[in-house]
Image (cartoon, rainbow, N blue to C red; front, side, top):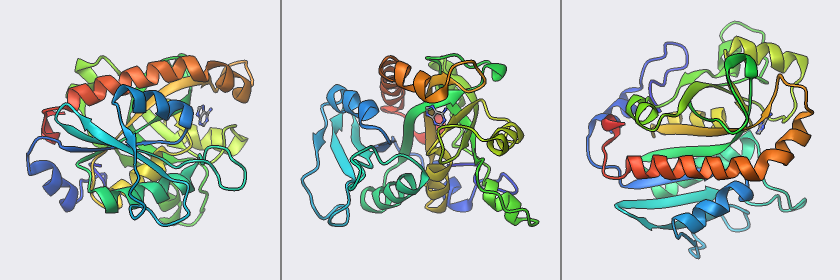
Length: 267
Ligand code: ADE
């Protein structure tokens, strides 16, 4: 992640050093919240499920798939199914935990957080578009006290990848994150204040942890539903999930192929 400082927008010294120590990117950490989004990439990159029981704490549902693809060690981490309810562990809490644990265990050169998102047609988003997020912020952390308000919003620039965005012809926009699929009136105002084009449930949390630990992170988000459109969000999301996942996985494959053999400053 860089630039990283949420108030000044400056890169932390640690991230700067990581980016400047130029060697080809070797270890990738891909974080994906939903199994439907993750499994096609596991197949594509011929990854195997980890059998090392010491990687994550005993009993957690988190799953790591790994393997070698071209010159890269790819780790794909999925937070798994909620132990009591059996649904994907979506949202910021699981995303933060797996990001932290995976960075500690795997020491990645680069994180890719990939997933689906709601898009705003007023900002030019269409179903099936794939965005790289230039910025990430929260829209559901309200702390109306000076400076705590900024902490709650947690706005930060993501790791800048101008060459990747241009060469792969991807769209770029700001990402706003909250723990709800739907959008309350407050969320709507906060998302608008964040100037977001896409809305998800993990990105800003991954960005926060990546920044804390000075690991560059990029965010690839495919639009399943139009938040400012006519259709109910949950219905539109479920209707488009499979088709849009194919677009997401194609974009992630292109990003991984692009990253292969390059150094961070080349991106
Ligand atoms: N993921 C896909 N669509 C979403 C939406 N509308 N809000 C948050 N996360 C999403």
